[in-house]
Length: 127
Image 1: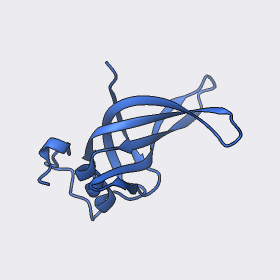
Image 2: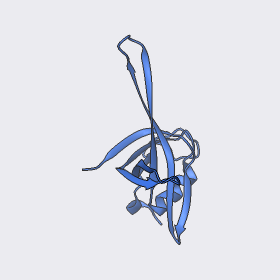
Image 3: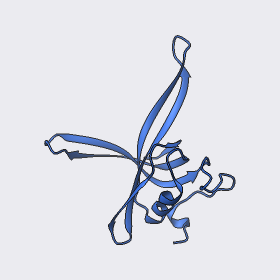
């Protein structure tokens, strides 16, 4: 099973691009952090950055409208790694989280509040 759940803060405003009529892709970064004490007893915070991708057009419209840098989200999806060749012919690898579910956890007045906030899935959207 390939499933990941992340709770974090959006690092930059989502970018939505159309590539065919009625089809879009949305991309943004999400920061997750963990705090712990190192062997010397010092508090340490470690932040990981994740590339988030959505191929679900109705969800992308909501993400573009309501999500901004700093928004707190729960993302559910799967890990995907792909490779490509850069302009110099070097093979590069990219790891992304392909999201199929997003839940707003609050923090932005324009967003729906977290209390009773439904999970957004393509089948649940009214479009």
